[in-house]
Image 1 (cartoon, rainbow, N blue to C red):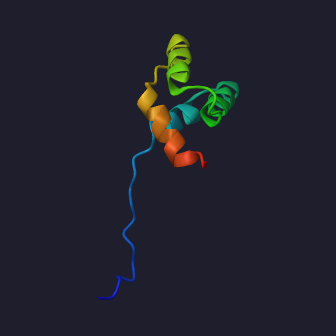
Image 2 (cartoon, rainbow, N blue to C red):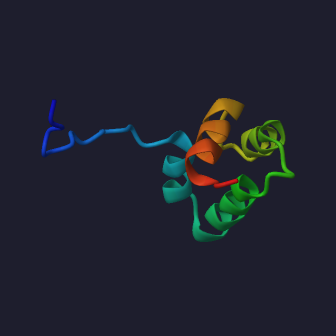
Length: 72
């Protein structure tokens, strides 16, 4: 059986963390991205700090962003 010549595009929805990175001001986005990339900072802590700052995000979107964007 031959493989198809065209691979269907996988239309993944934009991640919540990516949306926030785009919507936050430049300095806040830079800080948030640094937190996301720093595996010594737990998803729970990031979620808590973002929520306190008025930008709620739960732990699961943070974990998903890290799985898709951070290579181990």
